[in-house]
Image (cartoon, rainbow, N blue to C red):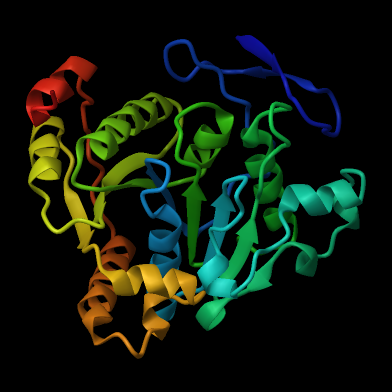
Length: 305
């Protein structure tokens, strides 16, 4: 067993024995009682700027239209995951913890959980100040707070919207909780290259946790030929596709989900695709035992010069 020193204040001993879960990797152990209950849990990953927050929020909205109780957790220091659901930038868990000198027992649920569009409950975990620590602690404390206030017990679906870079515990922490990881990508080399690293990371974490790959969401993509070639080689599968429509871009500028854009009839098929995806995920998707490619193989496969 290896040990790590946690970068933030915690109760009790700050050094914990943790299992290795992937070559060269250590992961902070979940605190007892922090595991999420009976909700179906999805973690969305993808290259930075690919549209994960827009996708996550619209997927949350779709689940809510299916009558599900939804909780969306933003896991990025930008804390804009739930912007279109709540119409505002929310205070983060790390911000409100700081106001009580990191004494979580002093917080009320309304200090960090906010109701958004169609009843979707929204939380922004936030992140540590730049250069000071690991985002994994923040995600862990967020889940612990939600558990203590019974928000997780009252949810049918939990969606983690995760920061784009495969770098540290901030990326990996949601994988300790999720049932299925979904990767958002565009039909281009850079997005697929990032997706391959995410496939590799999820494969490493799945050795110790229950998370499995659930599929690929093509975003801002008129075609999927490059994604299809990669999926065929690795064992992934396309779960949904959303085109590069200006109306989707405008929906974010208007602080709205696609379900609220009544002046954009071109979004009707987009809404239907989100509802179809939500229904398929709720029904259950088989795990995909994807095998990532070597970097050189991606260059050869996609013909990148």
